[in-house]
Length: 174
Image 1: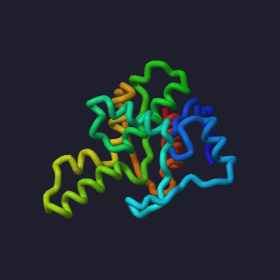
Image 2: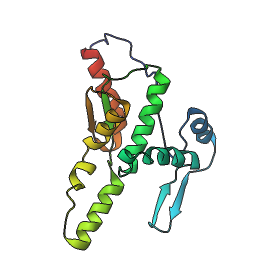
Image 3: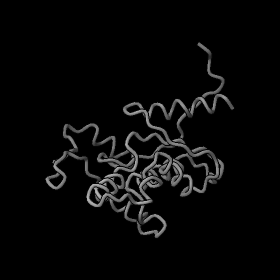
Image 4: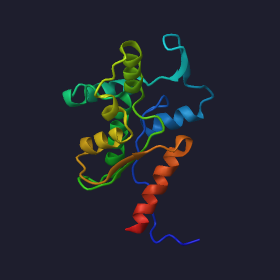
């Protein structure tokens, strides 16, 4: 096995989930003995609901007309990326690479377009560009002001680990 050339560390990360969106609240909830899933009678599924603070953060993004029609998944990725960049203290990020791992993509828009197609047998021209895998990373890059590499991939359950491995490979290769 080849030795790593460089020491690689994580200097910033972001999260938005039913556990919270900051390190302290996430750690506190991990230590509790309760679960954060609830049954939605409207959707007939169990779901993890975001906190009021997280919902407010997403609403602030959605208030921007440019972001108003984006899938919540895209908005959450933008929020998490913003957190990661702020923690890293990099300042200007105009040439960073964006590597998003998403095993589901823009799910609410996909469900909306599927329902429209099922009901009307007509497919919206926005169905493909707003639900394809690269849509999340492209919007994150746009939001951060990065002109560097922006890509997204899906490896189902190991997507996040694959994103880390990709990043390490790119850094090691120069």
